[in-house]
Length: 209
Image 1 (tube, rainbow, N blue to C red):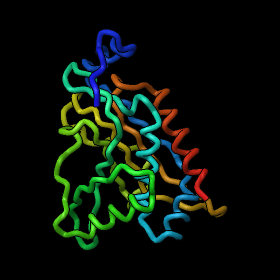
Image 2: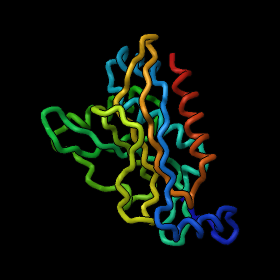
Image 3: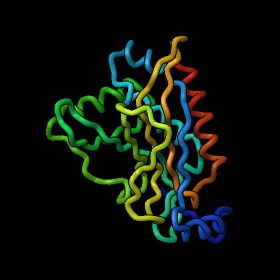
Image 4: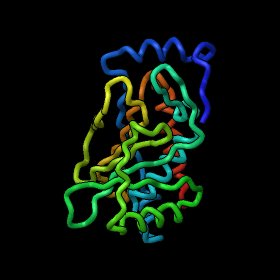
């Protein structure tokens, strides 16, 4: 992680503008095709949720602005996004937090998270607000929602990206989709960068054999 010089940063004027806004966040939901990933997850007997977290984290890492964070007026660029995700064990109604490893191997990523999820003593209690390299994930598989706003710990200061999705549905043609939500700080990126994220995410999902 390194600090970016605010005086020479090309987004400095936008950062200062949105830092003082009442709600300085971009919050977008879009329908996303996950047909290939669902089939891949079932074939490999791993969690679809964990697999989508992996692909979404890799996608965020491809986009420069998803590496930006800030602490007060200090602008930071992280090396990699580290996923922190909610998970609910069977028979429980309280979620725990799992931290995913940074790896190119999707199977290894999913199996590592399964091992942590099955460990009754494992619960990553740290929130993303206290760690700059975290990217936050959650899923509400009970609802095929149209829009979702995540908890903002401190308005204007909470600036880790938050990615979420709801229940997937499959149509008569066998196409499986879900509503995928992105919540980011407008001082660090614009709608263009969020749009780029969705394009890259769908491209990665479509490439799954």
